[in-house]
Every structure is written in structure tokens, then in C-alpha cells.
Amino acid sequence: MDTCPVPYRGDRWSLAAVVMVGVAAVVVVVVAVVAGAGGTTVAPAPAPSTPHTPSPTAIPAQPLLGFGFSAVEDPLSHQVVVFGGVDSYDTTWLWDGKRWSLAHPRLTPPGRFAAASAYDPLTGLVMLYGGRLGPGDVVDDTWAWDGRTWAELDSGTGAPPAGEGSVMAWDGVHRQMVLVNSAGLSAGQTWLWTGARWARQQTGALPVGLFVVGMAVDPATSAFLAVGCCAPGNSATSTWSWDGGAWHQVSTHADPPAVVGLAADPTGGSLLLCSDPTTAATGRQVWTWGGSDWIPHAGARVPVIPEAEVTDVDEGHVLLLGSLVQASQGSPQPVHVWSWNGSAWNQQS
Image 1 (cartoon, rainbow, N blue to C red):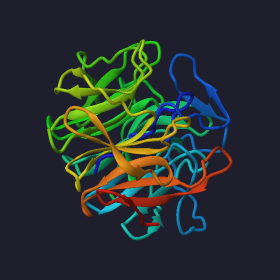
Image 2 (image 1 turned 135 degrees about the vertical axis):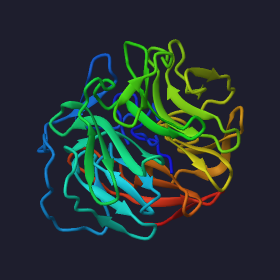
Image 3 (image 1 turned 90 degrees about the horizontal axis):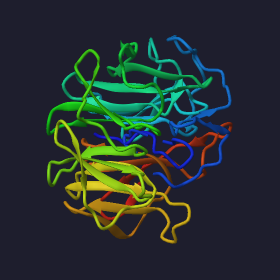
């Protein structure tokens, strides 16, 4: 299952990376823009600065989360793993296809939001990278979820730039874990996981000002694609193809606005993309990748304010996680799950 962690929404990141995960919507939160990095911070909140054992708390029926949580499927445990987010910095929630449960791992990463995440089929681990801690500090550590608890894989030595501007995805074509770190005033960087640390791919630079918001393998063409915004001199969404060593821009005629989710759709055998523009008359849209261009799905609308889009391999459909009301700092919202049947969304929780 692929995800699009932490979409960039003009003045902040909101999710991710996703999986999977828009670039035009402005969400009203208490933020301060970080010069040249496109990142944001939130007002200081109590969050752990070192790994710790979470204290037992009352368990609600479903997650009550702010923006910026990470979501990815763990195929071995047949669960979607949801971690962090504003106002829920160090919580780990699990969705088993029918109900939510709050995990109580022995160890957990320092609480954060806007972290990149993806599943590594070579190790059977869910990986989590970077993000921003509750008090505002950015981090560059790497963690792994084994179905029961978290463990630190790398403390950040020689790692990609710290912060919440990263998207991670498994490239099944070249059998690589790819992490793209978007940068505001310098070229974006591409890093590959060696099994113990991140190694920069020197030929994997992306244009200055391009923020990648989603990456996934297209089931139809077996191309590893990334969607981002905005290349210099162009405010539209752009699509990029990875050949295992470098990125190449794909020429398209239709460019979805404000991309907030990207995942492989088993029902249609293509990539499924969600957009959430704040000004477009069409509203939140669903798009599919036709092999050479993006095609709007007539009549299909995104039913919630999307935060994460995940491929559910077990059930053979795409899951959409989001809330009915926009979450903001101090105002977390219940997370709802919807599944895509190839033509419409069906609510699961």
C-alpha cells in the first residue's frame, strides 16, 4: 500500500507522504512560514523531545487528530498505521478494515507532524522519516514500525535535510525506497535507503521551488511517478518520472490543481489522484492517470477534507482518510475512512 504523506498547501504542509499526498488550499492554522523552505511550525505544544513510553489514556472510538498525520498500510499485520499529527503528536492508531484501535507501543518516536512514511517490503517494516516536533524543532531521524512497536533506525547522521518537506514511497520497479526532500530556494534532493541509512542520489535533483506531494508506481505502465507543484515560472501541477537514477518531466495537457493524494488504484489498474482546490468551481475532484495524461473522473467528488490516500492491497481498493471539518491546531477532528470502488466513495468509518 502506498501513501502520500503531507501535501503542501501554499503556506503549510498538511496531511503528507504521503503517502501519499495539494498545493493551493490555504488552511487557517496558527503557523509561521519558514523562509525559503516552504515549511511551517505551530505554536509550541507539549510533545516529547526524546523517545519515551506513552502514558495510558482513555481510548476513543476513532482518532481525533489535527493536520499532518502520516498514514501507510502494513501488509504483514493487515492494518493501516497512522502516526502523529498536530495535537496528537505521539499517538499510533491502527485501522484493520473495520475498526480503529489505539496502539500502546513500548517505544515511540518523539511526537511530530508532517513526517514522511512508507512500507518497505524488503524488511517488512513501516518506515517514518523526519517531520516537525510539537515544540517546532525539525528532525531528520528514521524510525520503523514492526507491527507492535517503534524502533529507531537512524538518528540522522548524514541524512536528508531535516523538516516536513519530504515524501517517501517504495519504488517496486527499481526496488528502492525513495525519499524526496523538497526545498524552497535550492534544488530538491532524492535519497535512497541503503538498509541502514539514507544515501543521496547525486543525479536525482529536482527544480528549485518544486514541492513533491505524492509518489507511486503506475500499475498500467510500471512507471514510478511523482506529482508536485510548482516548477519555476509555472504555477500548475507537474508530473515526473523516475528512471532509477534521475527525474524526467512528463509532458501533460491536464494538470490537476491542489493535489492532496496519490495512490495506485487496484480496481482501475491506474493511479488515483485527489485534488482539493479552494477556489475552483469543480471543488474536490478525483483524477486517474491514463498513461500519458491526467483524466478527471466525471461525477466523482472527494467526500471529506482529505489528509491521506492509501492503497489497500488486501481489500483491493484505495482508502481516503480525512475529516468533515478542517482540522487546525487546538481543534482536532474525527478521522473518517472512505473506500473507492472504481466509480464512487463508500464510507467505512
